[in-house]
Image (cartoon, rainbow, N blue to C red):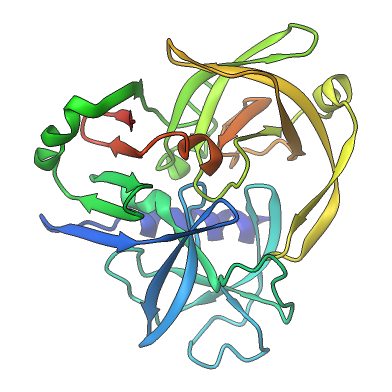
Length: 308
């Protein structure tokens, strides 16, 4: 357990230490199964990654037992990422100007069934640090600005504006300062029995669900579950039964939903939880954002803008 804490602390320290000069980066992407897939070159080799703002670790999935292009630490680190517990090796020889110098390898000989060509996951949350990030779904382009001056031309098309904050706000643990580079907005979910829960909605481009619930109290799953469904994630070779419920949600003044199905992922309470000591947090995924032409996360003004 101590090795796990040290591993996570090291990852977050290094990721939060990255800085950029005053430049703009443009990254084309494609959509596959409601995930943002980008092409990125590592050590001279083009690979395809899921751009994931809900992850703070870069992961490369290898389909052989060698990791032949990389030098790596042979010690296995058990790391909790979102709803997964993974055995990862730390890769030592990647230094990347956008996504940092610390990478991990996930060894698997399993072929993907989803049809998405994915070699790994990129830490999209790193780009929030002192940047303005735009994801344009019409042009299929991620743009990263290291200042906010280019944002003014977009103002006329703003549909909704939200204050952003870190997901553990108000429920901080001793470890929260190491994982505060995630972005979330506040909102409310309402269950079928009319009970309500005010919580944070994590901006999670790695999720292909409109919303999903991350729950650290098993009694809440027992209370609200309406049954089980099979959840599959072939990137991590996961297939298991997950409880689901129906909820409506409300974020901001005008963004309300009808009842929709939401999976409830249980995570043991942990000081390293993205949501701190909250019992319920919400993952706000790509299907929600596809209702809009683009989104802008302005870390200078601490705002999320949605454009029609």
